[in-house]
Image 1 (cartoon, rainbow, N blue to C red):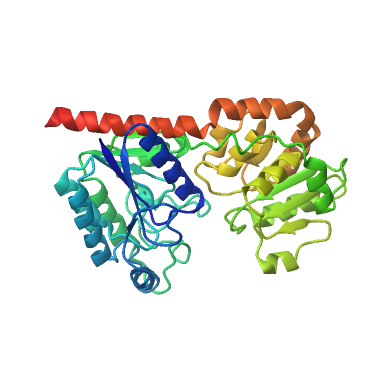
Image 2 (tube, rainbow, N blue to C red):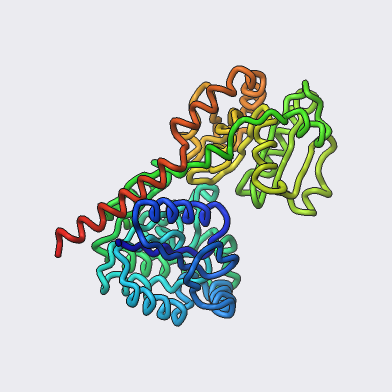
Length: 407
C-alpha cells in the first residue's frame, strides 16, 4: 500500500480542509495517509510538529530578526526523523510558513532522502524574501532579489530587522535544489508569478481548488435569513465576506460601495472585529462571523450578489462558494478572481475602483433570479472539490511511477 504524508502548519481553515479532503480521497484510492501539523486542533492528524513553545520561539525569531522559516530547527529535525521511519512514497507540503518549520533543514532532508514531493503554494511566500502577497505594495523586487522590504511590518511581521535580502537568497538555494519536486498551484495567476521567480524551472501543475458542492448549494430559506438581518424581500442584498476583513481584503472599499449604493441596496459585511462593528455606518449590517457552514450557505444563497473587494488573493474560496450557492460575484480584477469570474455569472472591475464595483454589483443583483441556475451550473462545471482532489491523487500516483522508473 503506497503512503503519503501531508504537512501544514494547521489542520483547520480553508487550507486545512483542503488537506483533509485530499487525504480522504487518497485513502479511498488505496493510500495510507499521515498528516503532520504544528498547532491548533488535530482534526484527525497523527503527527504533531514540535510544541507551542517552539511556535512561540519561532514567532520571536520572526518579530525580532525577520527569520521566519529559519527557526524551529529541533522540531523540524524531529519531524525528519519521523519521516525517515515512515519512509512515505510521497510527501505533500502545503504552507512552509506559519511559525513551525525550518525550511532549510526540511528541504535538505527531502533532497537527501529522495522522497517524491508535491508542494502546494497557497500564496507567494515561497518566492519572496518576506511577504506572502506583494500586489498591494506594487513591489516586484522578488523577481531578482528582495531588499529594503516595504512589507516588513506585515505578515510575517518583523519589528526590528529587515532580512529580506538574505531570506530571498536562502529560499532560492533551498527550494531550487530539490530534483523530485513538483509545484501545485491553485491558479494560472500564481503560476505566472512562479514562472517569473527563481522557481521557474521547477515542474509545476495548476490544480484549482474547489468547494463541497453538496454543502454549498442554493437554499430556499432566503426570506428567513433576510428577515433575521432586518432586510426586506425586495431590497437588493450585497454581501461581502472576509476573515479578517482588513485593508488587504478591501474593508474600506466595501464601506465605500455601501455609501455609493445607499438607498439602492443593503450591504452586509461578515468577518468584522468588535471595533469595526462599533463604527459601522448607518444602514450597513455587520457580523463578526457566521454560526457554522450551514449559516454561511444560507447567507450566500440569500444574497443577490457577492461583493469581493480584495486587493490580493490567489484563488478566492468565497467566490466559488457564492456561485455554487446560486449567487453571482462582483470583484476587483486581481489574482485568481479574473480566471474565476466570467460573464454572465461574474464581473471584475479595475482594482480600487469602488464606483465600478458598486455598479457591477447592482447590475448582477438585479439579475439574481435569472442567473441563479447559471451560477450553479458554472460552479458544478469548474469548482467541484472532488475533481480537484482526484487530480492530486493522480499526481501522487505519477510521482510514484516516475520514482520507480528512476530506480
